[in-house]
Image 1 (cartoon, rainbow, N blue to C red):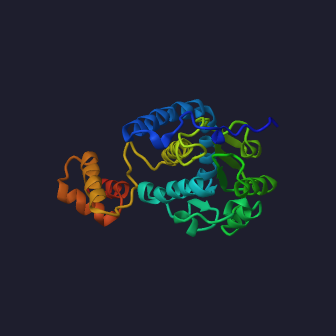
Image 2: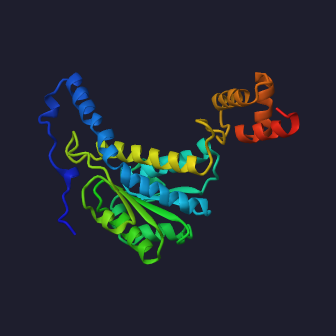
Length: 276
């Protein structure tokens, strides 16, 4: 394996940040942030392979797991938690796991990421099998919690992916479908919640959105399976029903929607019962 380059730990291109005026700080952060989508673009071929592999597993009834520590773990939990309300999939189909457990979502848990064994223990509690898919998230690419989990998966023929921000990282060498987004040194040296975190969030958005579309959770460009968890979503959903069924007014569309629970089900029911 290539000798590991920890680009994420290299010194910032900027000095004496404490002396910069606020406007200058914001402009420099923004300049750095602009580079992130371009780095993601270079990784699209890798992301495409990863998405295709995840889709195959999930079409066969498998689950998707995200594993990470710190920022990486929180981003995985964020993406997983948004799949049910956005796409109407059951909770537990996409799962985010963070080193240190739920407490680590809001607080740093000391040494949580340092165990090579704990990641697999946490995964095992979900009865993960080779019919599921596990993605390890680590900006550094070397987090022991993630490395150990991916190694254990590999030994058990559980398909894996990884998302990291250093070239030729440890997790890339282990994962079946590695993704590396090289964003360069952070504005604040080593603060990987910044560009690295943004890169991971962009990639996770791409993965979950494109997989859910492949699983039939979007029609045209609309979230027809979204859960109606608030008034804004009910309103949006009613308008989507009206778009599909031109002979219904708003109140009728809203009533159907609330009766059947999703745009998709409301439209299907209306077409059967009202020949809409």
